[in-house]
Structure formats: C-alpha cells, structure tokens
Amino acid sequence: MPYLLEPSSIPRREKRNLTDQERLQILEILLSKSASGKLKRGCLKEVAAMFSVDPRTISAILQRANSCIAKGLTVDVSPNLRGRVGRKRVQLDINTISALKFTERTNIRSIAEAIHVPKTTLHRRVKDGVLRPHTNALKPLLSEEVLPAIRAKWPRGNGIETILIQQDNARPHIHEFDAEFLEEASKDGFDIRLVFQPPNSPDLNVLDLGFFRAIQTLQYQQAPKNVDELVSAVMRAFEELPSERLENVFLTLQACMIEIMKVNGGIGYKVPHIGKGGLMRDGNLPTQLQCDHNLVESVLAHLHTGGN
Image 1 (cartoon, rainbow, N blue to C red):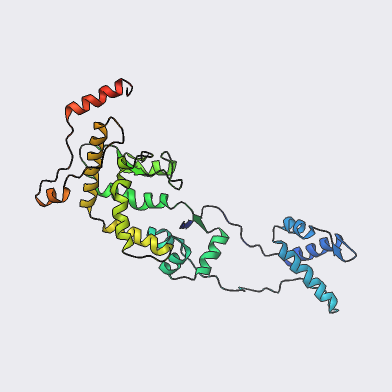
Image 2 (cartoon, helix red, strand yellow):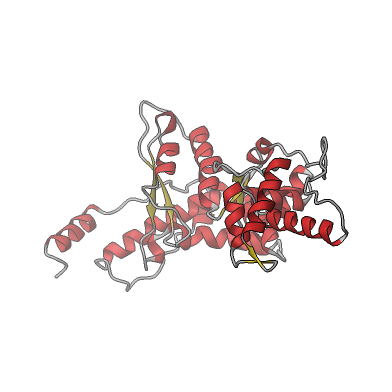
C-alpha cells in the first residue's frame, strides 16, 4: 500500500563529536578493560553508552590507537577535524513536503520528483527521524482534500445538518470516532461524521451499487503499470466522474430500498431499472423517488410483529 511522508514530531538524536580529552578517556577505559590485548564481549557497546555515541566511534578510536602503536608512533586519537568538514548536507525545506498534494507524496519517488531532490536525501531524512512514513493514507486524504472540499461546496443555510461520509469495512479505514478526524470534521461549525457501509448488503451500499464500478471503468482506460500509476489513475478517474452519474446511483439506491421493502427485507427482488437516461433527456429525472404510504405501513407492521 502506498504511504505518505510527513514531518516528524519525534525529536531526533544529533550526532555527537567527542573532544580530544574524551577520546583519551575512552582509550584509557578500553585499555583497563582489556585482557591480553583483547576486549571483553560487549565492551564497545558499554563504553559507547557511557559517552552517548555509536559503538563504531569507540571501535574507530581503538583502531587508530593500535595503528599508531604498530607504526611505532606516539598514540594520537584526536579526530583531526578542523572547521566545517565532511559532505555538505543537502538543504531540505520540510514545509515544501507538507504543501504537496496527496498524489504527489504517496512514496519517496513521487516526492523526490515533485521537489527536485535526490531520493537518497529523503531516505536519510526518514532515517534521521525528520520525516516519517504515514502508512494510513486515508487520514491525510480526508483532512487535506475531502473535508475542505465539503466545507467549500456545501450550501450554507440557516443551519448545517449532519453530513455523513460512508466508507467500507476494510481494515485500512480509520475508526469513526478517530480523535484527529473528529477535530478536523467539526471545524467552522460543521457536523461531519464517518459511517461504515452495511455489511453483506451491496444493494444498500451506494459505493458498491455503482460508484466504484463507474470509477473502475474510467480507471481501466488508463492501463496503469505500477502502484504509482494506479493511484494517479484512480484519483484522475474520481475527478473526471460526472456528477450526473453519482445522482443516478443514488436514485438506484432509493429504488433498491423500495424493492427490499416490498419483500419485507428479503433478497427475492431484482435491481430495478427506471430508465434514468430517457428521463434525463426529457428533463423529467427526479431527485428522489416517492414511496407508497401503504408500503411503509406494511413494513412497519412487519417490524412490530418481529418479522413473523
């Protein structure tokens, strides 16, 4: 599954440079812990923990001392580092990554291409803790694209009713009471909530009933060859999907509900076809279907008797 990168809030440990005096102290400790020229097992890690450095730094100090002794020179374990030394670090503005679109930061390759930096630079920032992978791509998508779009396009009247975002029951989806989502969804006085689709009831799930099929048809036209292209194709298909197609799916959902009521919640029915194309061409396509009052009373009576 693609993952996002975002600035990390976890403090990272800076690389520590030892002073010459500390290096001499380390060498003295190593010599005191050696027996017949050999160190005890775990000694390097123990000394490294004492000075808050990597064990490889301790090993390098010991190797340098042994090299001096082998050459008959005065032991010198100073690093010989003066001024600004080493490879210059590539500067990276973390805010540029936060400002990228959802589709531009699904993985390290897409981010590198978007901000024109080497992939190795991003890998190092992840290793250092400056960036962290976000394995759940849904939270950024909801908070950065879906919720702002709803707030911008939803008609504002005297009051705002509850707005429901339906998701299926797949494990990657976030919980309906996720604290981060609830905080974002309540901004500007909105009441936006997450709901899960009815399980094992595809005809009552507007996504499976027609929405996913419509997107899939457009996505197949792109013929993606890898995960990055697949994500881009799905996002492009979603943006290109006509709003009229979605309205038709919701009409089909209402028609299915009526048919299910006719069989008292059973499965002995067929998905109805009401000729939406012809009605749309004639300008007679309704926004909602009417349900017979007697049918409603019959269903209520059936529920009150416990479905018997």
